[in-house]
Image (cartoon, rainbow, N blue to C red):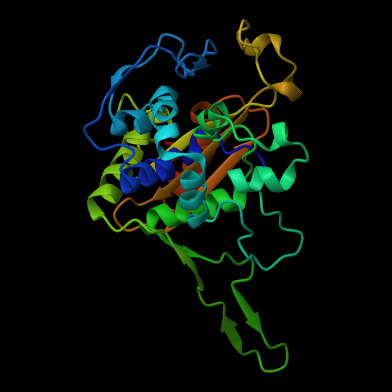
Length: 304
């Protein structure tokens, strides 16, 4: 299935913003818990009601500040946002060797014109750009697409076609042909400093005390990078608050997390989606950590 990718797109969006000049590494904003478009009363809320205070791009990724990305979203624009996100494999089939794969959705102005019938429906609104910046609205991605995107972050832009088969064996001769990696694309971000800065922030997500997933990654014996995400199942009215204990389980937010490790020599990329799991950092991140521990041979250490 496909799901709103939530804040897991923020590292990719950060690279798009840096490459396009919509932000820089020193720009700061003051997060007061919500954002408003000019001359609009509607408040686009941060996940942290009291706000994060002054944040730069590094903080906005590590602490998952929505307001920072709301603010730069209209400077990037939805079409440029779509252009870069598609370079990480979102909005297209990955080409995995099984049938029935869904492409997901990365919306753009052209996409909306092609998928709605009336002029009012076809018009793209600034508010739709704002919510797209945190992976909400029309945006949809599969877990495999998110894992592929995490892999592209790990390789600093090189994306490979995923495979379910490791090798094909001739039943008569026993000869085995390994499935060879196939390049599927390259993200157009050439500045090495941008990559280092974004990946460093993803490292702090898991291994800095103020990172959203420090509880899952802070004690790891190896370095890792990650990004938490939460995807709304239903919209919360402007005058209402999301109270998890009062919401039916089937309507609670989905929990998402993408990650890769080790930081300097990546060997595994992971995406986890827990339907109605509520918190990406609290619920999905420990699962991602367990998968990486097992793959890297640290499972016994983690259990002690």
